[in-house]
Image 1 (cartoon, rainbow, N blue to C red):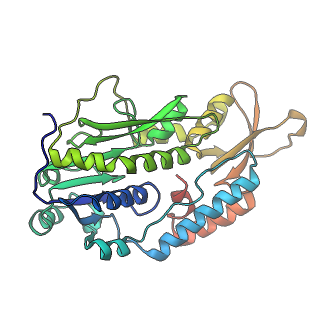
Image 2: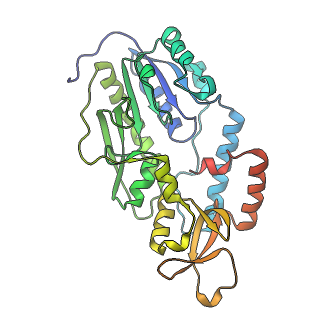
Image 3: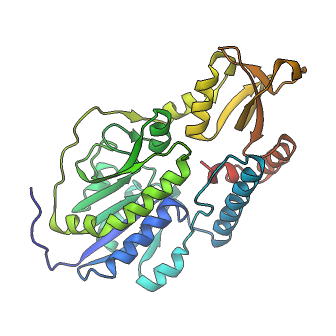
Length: 345
């Protein structure tokens, strides 16, 4: 179906996101900017997996900024264009635009009672998924007239998790994003819009994610126009690849680093930024490796030989030197896991 003329009906939008930091924050703000110029669409709710804590968001962003500064200090060659997670205060926007902040039971968007509440009380017509990490059930999809997902990769070749990192790992000269209709199959719906972003030799996954989000936010008025006009989009064409969570684990969790070449390890580290490596029976979250000479090697558990004969030493752990990393791991064990390691992925 081709695009039709705009209807005068006021469409009610629910945004589904995994939080209010980073990419979701940029896209939510982009949507709110877009509806300021659109008289027949409104936002009625933002759905999140947990109720946001502004203190927690502040701490997460501060930890991220501190982590980046430490990494730049420890690794002069490291470049990072975006040094903030650009958080938003969703409660402020909720008051300003008069929408609800919804948290489904146990964070499950497919909970039957939540679906019933959306259908009977919120009565939405359009769903926008901005980094929602859950698959929409058929029952949830059915309550909307139109559903759109933002995917951080070029479909159909880069479906699934960590699309930007996978494109870096594959050595692509371009990466990109896709807005597509949602179906009961992940990342398989018709394409509404795609944009490409060039990849430079020193680019990293996080900066590219932010560049994509900023560009995508500018496209939201076009996406809303398509939604209001009932545009069906275009079927996906070309080679289809889907990267699951298990695929990501298989390439970033390394039981025996000596079984891989130096180039392979460095390529994985550059693309995914963190590798979980087992050395002398202990797992480390490694963010830095360097060559060492045979003459300088002593009996040290953090040095290993690659499959092609190079000696590598692990030098950064979550961007920290070993002694600070060990202290951090104690704090992480005491206070829980959702700290720096969640922020930097």
